[in-house]
Length: 198
Image (cartoon, rainbow, N blue to C red):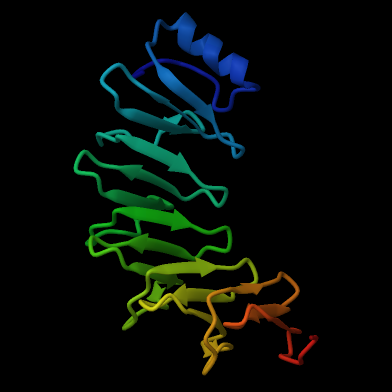
């Protein structure tokens, strides 16, 4: 697609598809993201991701690529490792990530070769020293991880809300309310100030 002239943003999926066909570009798996980015797979099976008329995946052989709502993007290399990019900088540089995800709040995570998850915020690993089988970051900034025994640990501002509690089901709401379900299946809900609701 080098030296081809086209609009920075297509008005519709059909416009993009027509443009590819008019330029005799062989493609499959054409996909347009909500943020306007788009991608396609070429005849060799490599994925090409574009933003505002520029190929983000230029110079790499991407088996897969994805664009997130927060403008981060990721590609999978030919060895099966994923690379998360933010503002032109690779966040996963130096690690071998088998899976990555970027949250709308700016937090991001990756899974290492041993299957453990690592959660980052503002360049700091929140899961440092932990063996997390799963991590999740909520829009309100709360986050939790699942330990090797399958128990969930919910954190807010560096403090564990579920300390000394054994639970395999936690959730945090946008207004700050949160809950956990105990081993008997009973639900315990708290407000943002940790006052019990029920």
